[in-house]
Image (cartoon, rainbow, N blue to C red):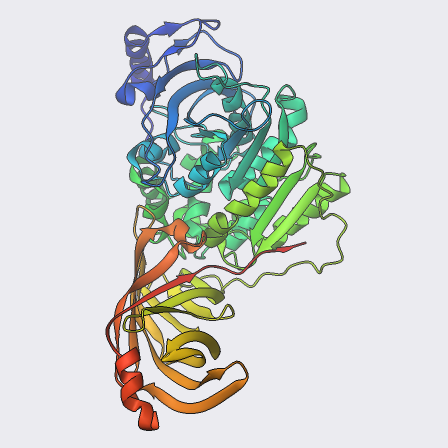
Amino acid sequence: MKKLPPSKVFMWGVAASLTLPFMSAHAAPSMGPAGEAFYQPPVMAGGTHGDLIWYRNATVDLGSSAPSLQAWNLMYHSNDALDASNIVTGTVLMPSSPWNGSGARPIVSYAVGTHGLAQRCAPSRQLASGTDYEAANIEAALRAGYTVVVTDNPGYTTGKVPTYLAGKAQGQAALDIVLAAAQIPGAGISARAPTAVWGYSQGGQTAAWAGELLTSYASDLNVVGIAAGGTPADFTASAYYLDGSAGSSFLLQAVVGLGEQYPDGISIDQLANSFGKATIDQVVANDCVFDTLFPYMNTSISKYTVGNKTLSELLEIDAVNDTLTAQKLGTKKVPVPIYMYHGQADEFIPLKQHTDLKGQYCRKFSNATFATYPSEHIVTQFQAAPYVLSWLGDRFADKFTAGTCLTLQPKPTSTANPGGGNFVVSLDEWPLDATIQLKTLGQEVVLPQDATFSADTDMTAGTLDGTLNVPEFLAKLNILLPLDVKLSVVPVGRTSGSANLDNNGQLSVHGQANANVSVKSAGFGWLQIPFGCQTESSVAFPIDFEGPISSLGNGNLSFGGETTFPSMKSCGIFNGMFTLLMSGPGQEYSFTVSPPAPTSW
């Protein structure tokens, strides 16, 4: 990144000191300015971590289904990973409805995953514009009645670069925002309210660090639980997993963030080649998480380094190795219960290093619960939300948890797609919740509970390839008489189409499933009269979806519409009757696919 010469830095500092408001270390928090000026810290004489600097009312867009809420932006004091004072921004959200539980309304410090290094990527900015891809999880916590505080993480104030994946700094910022939120005048937030820290991916790292820091850094907070998923606990193992793979953009951003926090450990000026510096300038100036995902995919870190040094060669440099080692989790006991979770098919963060972290915590007598989810990184982030919130609800209610440190279950192993290729989200026998509304009969046919949908959605190639699996099943239909009708829905060819993920985290799926619909028999219970009835040609079920990427995991991936059933054949003397009752346009269908349930370990 280009740096200003010292003379210009000095002049800019003089100008800033003349134009910015001055605040003493012990000044009461004030209303912050409107617009982007909010992110420019005032000239400060100092402050204590957790002190609120200023705040303002905020408008947050979580989507049309979000509950009514109050929101504030805030700026507060924290400490970085080297224990130097820093200034961080964030957002506080509180349901408008009163808290119906006992005691003070609980607080969830929601630690976000990767958002990107450009200033516009800050969670507070994304929440205001309605483009934050984690809105579904935040909304779910609000619907549970909790106050939700969301730190932007260090480095999103004007003129700064995010210290991305500097775990200690992130953990401290996630704790300090709770203290700062309690100082917003009239908000009614208690710093002694039951509190939990919940995060995934980068946020999982943040949450786990917050847990390890509780005793030494935030012992006055009433933290009752930590939920940390998809956690990069071992940076060296995670770096090798990312290098030259589908998630290589995260490694590039980690080098930038850690270089910003530890300039003596990772010197960008000395280690990056001209192409690397130009790429870093682009990423820092403009790019958010989905802007970087595809352009920098499958790129080795050596492409950006002087002499094309590989990751192994970089780690032979003591300062670089020490910087990565400093991010490693598991050195301290987490003094409150911790819920750890990971996708078994995670293609970005290796599963093994997270299960190893569970072992380290258990050996230190932490109360750890570990859950394995069947899918990949992004799906798991959103599938886990209701399980996490249920677990947190029990912690807020002071219910006992034994954890899973003592388990007879085998240690989970990765089922991730091979690295170095396209970004493919595999739906492996996902449960299919499906209904067909027969127009003429005016009756709904519910497909069996063991129906599944399997597919590979290749986000790089933009393709969908899959298949339905629907076992034969009995349906109650009034065909002259109330009958038990055995039906089958048999795929014809593959379910194919397109699947795309845009730079705002919006998923687009368009394709078609074709299937023959057959009436195998009809009767009363076990007494069935066989038929050979089926549609003359396959039924086309358009598969169309537009919505947030969170829908892949949270059960909102739904396809529906109307289709036409062709005439029936092979029904013998009942051909005309079945054609009249079951064929024609206007047959409504609804398909919802969701990932299989997690398992405990």
